[in-house]
Length: 399
Image (cartoon, rainbow, N blue to C red; front, top):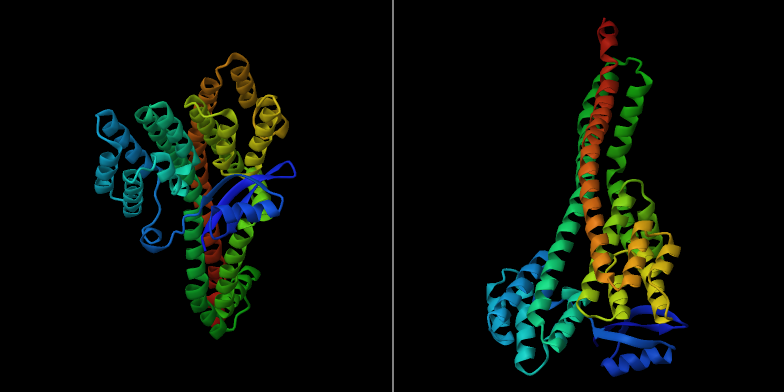
């Protein structure tokens, strides 16, 4: 039985989730019985079979494919032939299979939009909505180029944030590994030496030796507990309440929270600006932008703005009231709404925050590197110093 991803309204609020049913009509009927009015539903990609074993499709892959697709259409090549060429050229095997499936659907008379909608989890709602507008308006080539540029900018932005976040994590893991090796394998050698002499040990030395003994006796329990904690934490984070709590905590983490907030704002304004500039309705654009924000706190603020617009009000005011977006964001959006230059203002905001993310990642790397080196040197040096303290008295003890 297939699983369907849906979005709808219930009690005046936008809700979403998944439901299993025989077909789309049965899924809609199930949701209607629960008082949910569905405005978007699609079959979930199973991720099984060949496609599920071939890895993920990156924004970089999508940027290259959509750029090549645009170039071929601009050169007069048909959609079916272009898809065939793209499927042969791409090196990502999962994307290759997806392109072949899309080509088969288009060849049988399906529109490109409906064929790609089956793989919305891969291409994203932004690309599907823009391609629908491009097909309807006869500007598919230009639309694909815009999508390619959007993918490229999102890829670069995400890469910067990932590298900034990954660097301290990798260094910390290496530090923990070095400390564990010292405590489990090196310290017992010193402990047996000091026990054979029978000398009185300083407090730091006793602490390190006791810690070493504790780790050696309980290492498997500790590793099992760590695995269980990670498993349970990931399951909790997938729940609606867990995701809301975690996303709120993430935005409040010193240094990293500010970086993630700037990244989310840059993605939101870039996505919204691209959609508005491509002719997508503002309500649909806000809904898609919310889904691609990557943080439930920011997503809810955008959905409140969408409700405001549906009631004939402005976008900027609910964003200002959320206190998540800096004044420069809401001010420029407000100016864009009043002057009819919303997409231009959104582009300025996204450019500004992308530069902010770039500067923040550079600064973060330069700060983290010496701090982590001091941390590793301090801990490792402290352990070694604690174990060498008794050596000063070892000669007199032997006499």
